[in-house]
Image 1 (cartoon, rainbow, N blue to C red):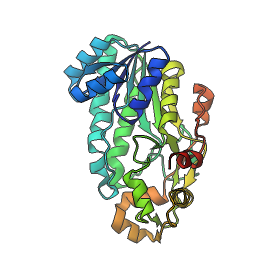
Image 2: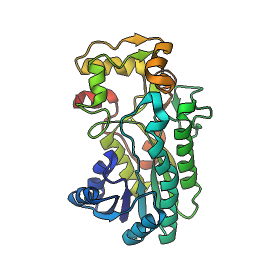
Image 3: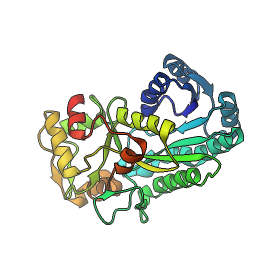
Image 4: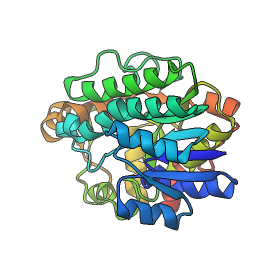
Length: 311
């Protein structure tokens, strides 16, 4: 199939493009400039140039590629500042709203039959009820102020894609990424903070995280491109775990002392309200549907083995 990947040089894109090519697909990479063109070419894809926020450029790029499938992996997330969470995600929010609308309009014009999009299942589920959520559970209906715009952008993206009756819309709610090119990789700032005991457990550390290795996320995306049906899929490993469990274990893997524990009010001063939510209130996600319907099974079924291998 002819497949266009938007966000082709990001963490997932760098893992996904080679897999698509090895599977025999004709791959086009939507990039913004010369550096992206060089990287896409090096990976074996044909680059097409467009700014995702410029509708005319997006339409021209999509017409040039004439894809059967579009994979939307556009983000602009750098260092996550939990004290100013809304600033961290502002650029990505635009890509998930304006960028999605632009891609969908272009896709409709050329008759794209499948549209696969990156969503978030790590930080977005309703913070009530049980510790592990399925795709039928709602996104956070009462987000804190700092996370409202991010949740709203996710909601816009998912609704736009699932409501597009002219194409097969597939939403992938990825867990928290780790592995090469992510914020949880050897030498990353996050790992160094844990080594230096600057990443404490806040409150009871009861926030449940669902992780996914970046290579497993790419494999799931390939499965969605080839076999997916309309709907939402959680792309996470088999082992959702509270912060109070995974953070000390990761510290031990890194040869660090146990993380400090601080009360919620101290955590709020240091990491903002969003930091407290991430530590104490998150809900994890189940991957049962993705296994059942996509035929996908993570090669790293638990963050325990996956992180150990990469530390």
